[in-house]
Length: 378
Image (cartoon, rainbow, N blue to C red; front, side, top):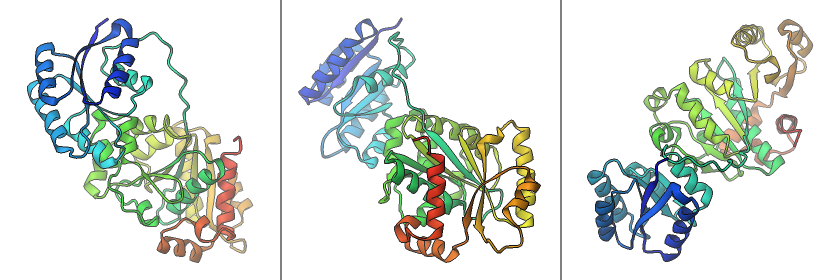
C-alpha cells in the first residue's frame, strides 16, 4: 500500500486545518509533508518533498496568479496531481482552473467524502471503509427515428413537469449532438456545453460537471448541445456512457433529448435508460417505422417493458385509431398527446415551457400526465 504524500499551499488557516484533519483521518494511507502560505514558499516545499499531490488554495479576486502557479508547478513537476480548493462556484473559474491542468476542483469547506474520492482516483489509495450508498437516478430517453415529430418539446416539458411534481433535481441533456436546439427552445445562451465535458474526459467528475450545467428559470438543469457540428461529431458512444454514469449519481431524474438516428451514441443512451419513450405520429409511415424499430430493439435485447410508445400530435378524428395502431404494432400505446401545434409554436417563440405559457391547455395536461405516470412510485 502506497502512502500519498501531500503539500498544502494556502493562506487560509481554517481551510488548512480542515484539510489537514481530513488527511490525518486516513491514517497511514496519506500524510501532509509540508504546508506553505505563499506560492513561492510552496514551490520550494514541493521541490524538497516531491509530493504526489499539491493542494492549492485558489486566490481570491485575481485568478491569473493561481493559473500561473499551476502551470509553473506542472512544468517543473509534470507527474504531480494538483487539487484546487475554493469557495468560488462559478463555471468560468472551475473550467479555467481545470483547463490549466488541475486534477480536482474541491469546494470549501472540503468534505471528507470529496477529498477521499479525489485521492482514490489517483489509484494509489485503498481504503477498506465501506462506501456510502449512492442513489442512482432514473434516465428517461425521448427518441424518434424521424425528425420533426416533437421530441424536443416532449423532452423539455417532461423534465419541467417531473421537477415541478417531485421537487427533486432534474436534468435535461441535449444529445442531439449535431442539430440540438434545447437552448433555442428555452431561450438560453449557455457558456458551456456537453463538448466542454467530452474534451476534458480525463478530469471528469461531479465538480467539473456542476461547472458546465446551467440552471433554467423553470428549476431544471440543462446540459446543452454542442455549439458547432464538428464538436458534436467528435463525441463518442463511450463518452456518452461515462458522462451519464456520473450524472446518474448527481440527479434523481435525467431526461435525454436524442438525435433522430439510431447510431451508437443514441444506442448508448438507450442502453443506460430506465424508460425509452419511442415517439411517432399516427400515420402509415409512422407506424411502419415503429414496426422496424421495435423489431430491431428487440433483436439487441432491449426489454419491451422499457419501451413506451408515445403518439404525438394525436387527432381523435384522424383516419387511424389508437386501437388499430396497437393491433398492428403488437405493442400498447403508452400515451397519446393531443395536437396543439399553435400552443407548442407559441412556447417555442417565447422560449418557455408549456406549463409556463398555458397550464390549462390539453397539451400541458397530457405532458403532465406523462410525467406523473413515469414517477408514480414517488
